[in-house]
Image 1 (cartoon, one colour):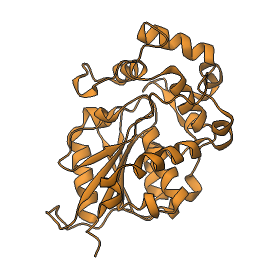
Image 2: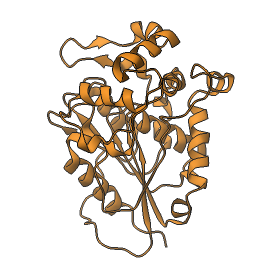
Image 3: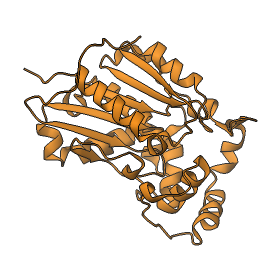
Length: 279
């Protein structure tokens, strides 16, 4: 369903803030600079247990991150006082945006006026994810082994040179900007225990049947060469969300917010223009 057209982004009374929710292992520098104030939540240093697990995480999964996001935003006066609030989520961040909105019914801290969802899915992630753009190797069969603590520690050592080395990445400076290079930089940017926590939270994530409840305008951006999530998942989001517009970005990979900044800025401007200030 396409958004109604005809409006241009103009200066309007009242404050506007954009919430940037990066993907798993990434930080907000994966997004292009915007001419709008932004806030973000970075969970790449989060240690929920000695091996990245905890009873609460295993019981509540994504609900743990919803609560963490609530606490983060409760400390941000600019978010709480803004007249207009937009969310831009990438990959895991897009999934969190949907789970967070649904947990609150779009009220309270999740009172937002629109979303831009990049390279993401309504779930289930591990059933839909593929590695590569040609062979499209299913991720689900290998996830059980991949997410064992010992395996995650080994990958961390191989990618970062040390188990506990965490190097804050500036993705805007990354060259080349291939999906593989972004993923490698993401491993260096992330505590190995946080990596496991992200994955554990996503087990069983599936909000496809609840998409109709998300009634704010949404623009879905998905790359035609996404090496993790196939473009059909973008179409699934457009079909399920009542006020959604899908924009397929030619030749973009999973790192679309970094490689195709103009498309992200255009989508943010479009959502802002469709979301007039509250009276």
